[in-house]
Image (tube, rainbow, N blue to C red; front, side, top):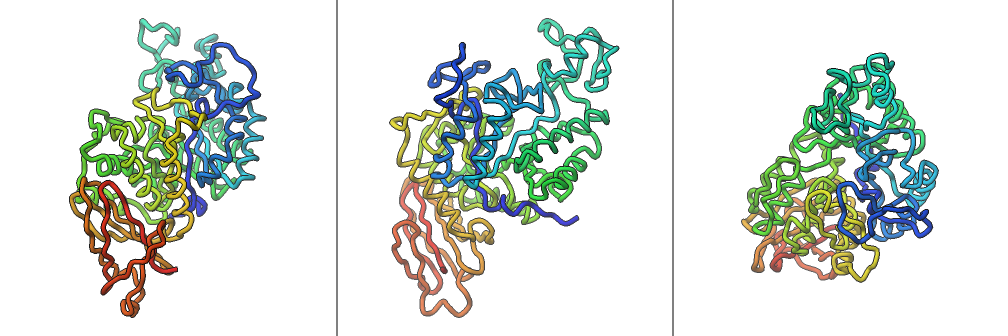
Length: 486
């Protein structure tokens, strides 16, 4: 069937927010037992971030150039990450409740920022009403079929015995919903529809391949798109997902293949390969290895799907990129520039833009330090500049991808459309690199002579093309960007 992904996504720059840790409003109700904002995060502790706090800092996102937000779960839950949902129809009171979310959503849209919510539909919490009803009434509960039960009484809290019901990764606090049951399916579809009617712009779907009910995701897509044809359906799939991106299920996946390729090339010998995000091995890549990874990514899916892939360098599920490359901010800078020029919307994990660090969960979920004295202001300026570059050049969002140079420590490519070409050259080596980039394919026929001019993106310096070849020197651990055309 024809593949169509939302047009707005191709122009999006996403910002991922972990709601408990981004910002706490000055007028927040005083609560006991919140962790100090600047203390190390813990698995069970709460910092008290809320929607009023996020709304108060929308100007930060606008200055960065963000025009879309992906929020980790926001519904009522007993966990700081809120993947333990016990009420899908109410926003957690610790975040300000449903009214505060509506106010935030209106404010975000007024700033031109789309909002995508995290949908956790494979499993719920022990606190969800239907599971609690089953705990109280056993086999006589009308909600018996909502879950997959192997015996009674339920071992929901006794840590000395194994859970006797299906739960995600055998975690008893996460009972698996029985999506084979028509009532459960109807309930979950209703949740998706309800929040689209509230005005959200899409769903990021948590562990969707754990739901194996035939037809579930086909129905989900049909019902979502009937309400909002441009709603973004983003799946958390860590590996290749060709069968799921054929126009019947999801629009895109969280592109961890992109993530691993960037770790390998831009991290290089500095990459911490002892960590296995998502269970995948991280491997150092030279230019040729990076080229193979990039080429594979670009050939996996229909081009319309590729232009919608969610390209991330960090997330709440793995150590931050900066920590993974042993705190070398030049490497994060290069990877971010590449991210902003690659097909598919880039995603900035909150705080990466000012140099936040973080190891494995929960350390990767630290609170945002709003005291600007602790920011890396040069990195902050670079992030804004790189995002602005993507917004300024349609070729970086929809243009062809043309590889121009591959060497052990260098990689160069162009994004090209009918109006312009943007050439980017990266050097991850310890010495300057002299590059001669054949740009014949980027220049309209008949315009090689007189020599066209490439303009360096940030200095404005003009560099002539001799016989269609752009010659440049790229310093160690640096990049150069040139614009040909308008």
